[in-house]
Length: 234
Image (spheres, rainbow, N blue to C red):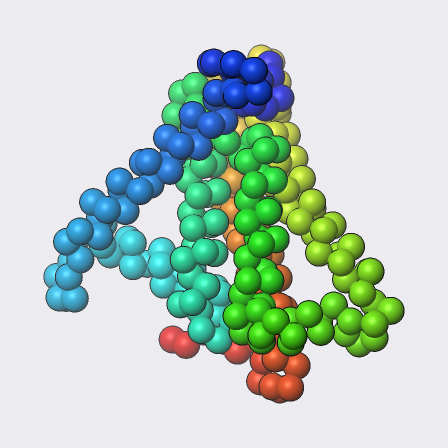
């Protein structure tokens, strides 16, 4: 049993390495990209739509409403980034039902890369909404003494995002291996169902935390309506 798909190396030359994490990540991105193109190439505003378009609309509207529930007024602006985070993590974990597949989110390098994306996106959205000066002022709010603590908070929550997702996915894979070794008939099926549920929950938690961080960075302290999240429009 190996702890991470990083340990399975297909090719290596010096520092360059092709491991299972890279293969599954790019394979998953290719499948999602091609699948999105196939579904969206024949979109129609008519009342009679395909089942795939109906499913896609449910997913997109659901993610948009969740973003709005957190308090981001223009949910469509943040939908591509946050939606991509959720769908990638969710698909990565759902595909564990495929034999011999190992989720790239079981690698700390993948979860760290996702957390770094959030770390970069937060100030980008914050500066876009409040301007450079307005965003930088958040680091000395309510007093300049908070500057080092706010910086540490930014770094620590990025680390927490990476480690939380990695730890949950890795522990699920380890438990599955142990149970399969002890009871290879009935329990693996139940455990696989639980693992799928856990994977979806982790995708939801990661994307919601990213949304909360972005909402805090883009919130206007002088706008009372931005302090209390508004419910999504029906």
